[in-house]
Length: 181
Image (cartoon, rainbow, N blue to C red; front, side):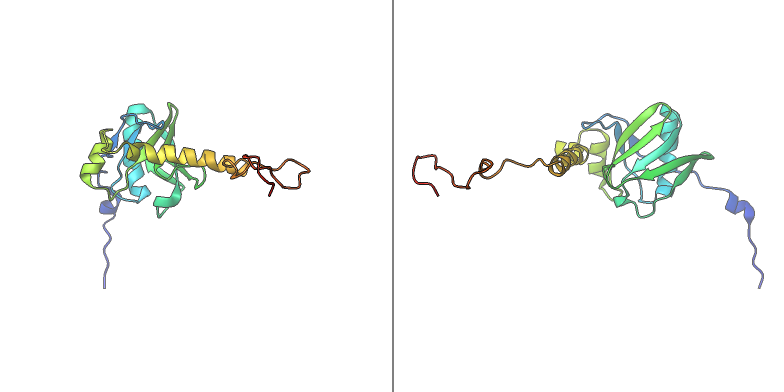
């Protein structure tokens, strides 16, 4: 049996569909919204970095949270140039993507690929039906980080009862002046 490989067809790549991207600023320090078609970063990031590169200068690094991406490459190619991909489960919001370029940093809200077209269109236009949807992922993660830092640094919510003075027997005088317990 003879196998023929057409190397000219393998060398040609189909044009990438344009990135579904809106650069309308949103609350929480977001510079816009990105709606990928799939969870395949190798396929999705090149069109995003190319679109932002054309507008704001070449993207050199993309930082993301690994929770929603099944395969995490170390780099992707953008027009023959390498774009570094980094990820952190602790420092990066799972709903946010950060792009770095010589022109600065851009933070984008990531709309999950399976989101319905109507909901995605509202978010892309910056007029989501529920403000919590727009603000929640980024602001909520920041609030959780602040609360976790507070808890781990020894802070806590108000105690259920005032602490006993040092050297106390632990007995407290009731507020109504009654017997000690």
